[in-house]
Length: 197
Image (cartoon, rainbow, N blue to C red; front, top):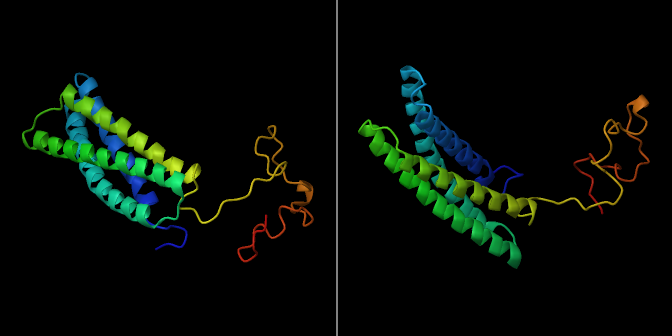
């Protein structure tokens, strides 16, 4: 396992979101713009849309398994446990929807049938469920701090990234040096120095 990752769930989940989103977009275009698209483009996008959906279903299974591992191994407290459980439940329901759609798309592909508005509606519902699941996963990291190695302590008045435009130059920028007497930059970029707050 990579040192900075407690598991592979953060990597896999991005493939799930990307592949399914591309599949949904392509299927929608094929239905909405079917009268204006050249036949060759429609044939190519039909194949690409199916492959994105099938790959999304496969990678989502791996994402779910990695997420299950994270659920059982990442250190957490009672509030974050409730949030993790909510995320897990949404993920399980979303995976079922993706798997059903992948099977449905397989039948359509074998029978050379075009997708219907019902299929598109199911895709959009699943897309919303996927985005809701991803949002809840983001909450686990950015609100509860799960799965991260360390969190910086907030420092009042220092490292203000809301400064006015063109004020992001370093002190003593004319010398291109970071001053060594700045209290928040002493050993800040050293991998071996302890971070004391």
